[in-house]
Length: 337
Image (cartoon, rainbow, N blue to C red; front, side, top):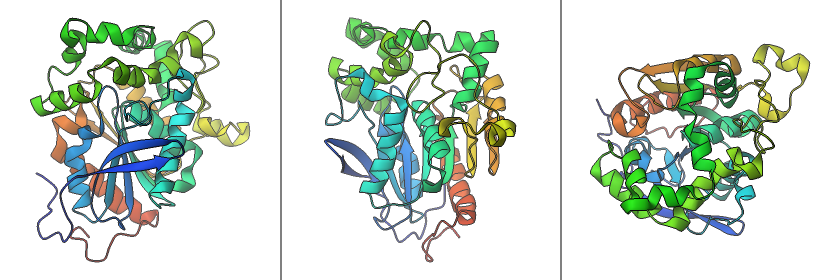
C-alpha cells in the first residue's frame, strides 16, 4: 500500500528547480517544504531524476524536502567534455556541493545503480554529513569489486561495463532509431521511456551519461585492465578487495575504504540482472553502523519504478526512524510520527 499522505499539510506536486554549483547548474525535481530536512535521491544509468517521481511525492508529503538532481552529464548545463571530470570522487563532490547550495549541513541520501555507487562513496568519506543512507540495487563498491574478481557469475553480469566505457558507445546505442537504448527501457512504463528518450536520446546527452563508465572503466582511466572503483577518485589500482571493516581500525585505510558508519538500508532484488546475490550479501561486511538488508523477491533492477509504493514505504520508515537516532528533526505536525 502507498505511504499514507492523507491530511498532509504539504504540497504533493513535483517542482523543477535548478541548483548552481560553481560553473555548473544542475536541473532537479523536488517536492516538499523548502525548510524540511533534505533528502537527496541519486539516479542511475540510463535514467534521470524522473525515476524517483513516486518517492519524491511520498517523502515530500511527510514534510521532507526531497530533491532528485539530474546528475553530472545528465543536466545540460553540467556536462563537461573531459571524461576525467566524471571520476566518482568528483561526482561525490557534486552531492556535497548540492547539499551546500540547498542550505543543508546534513541530509538523508538515496542512490540507485550508479547513484548508489556515488552514495556509498559520499557516506564513506563524509559520514558527518549523512543522516541516513539508502542504496537500491548496487552493492558496496568493494563487495562488487571482490565479487567480480572471484565469482564468474558476477563477472559475466558486469561484462557490459567495458562496452559502455568504449569509444563510440553512444553511437552504437543510438543506431537504428536508438534500438539498443530502447531495448534497455523495454520493460519500463511508456511515460518513463518517453522521458528518458527525451533526455538521453541524442549524442551529446548520452555521451555525458556514458562518461561515468569512461572515467571508471575506460582506457583513459585505467592502466592494463578495468576494475570497479574502490577509491573516490577513480578505478582501483588492483583487483584486491577493499579493507574489511574488521581490519579498518588497525590498517588506517584511506577514507574511501573505511567502513560505512551511518544508518544504512540496502535494498536488493532477486531478478536484478546487473548485481548478483554474492555481492549483495557481502555488502554487510563493509557497514559497521546500523544496517538493514531488504530483499525484494521477483523484482528486477528498476526497483523504484517496479514497486514504487514499497520503496517509498521503506524509505519513509528508514528515514523517519533511523534518522531520529541520527538526530534528524522531523516537523512536529508531520502526519507520519
